[in-house]
Length: 52
Image (cartoon, rainbow, N blue to C red; front, side):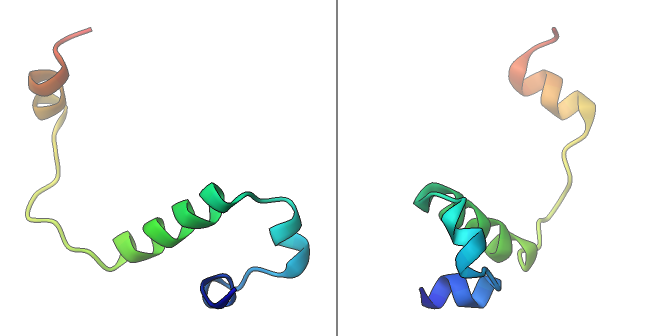
């Protein structure tokens, strides 16, 4: 409940969510503060996954 309060989730909002959704929101909140050394380009993505 503490983490839900930190996210500003109301009881009504929680009624429409499952635990996984709350965990996803917490993960996204933590990622907002993260800095990354570079941003992948389309070429990076194609090199990793292959072209289409």
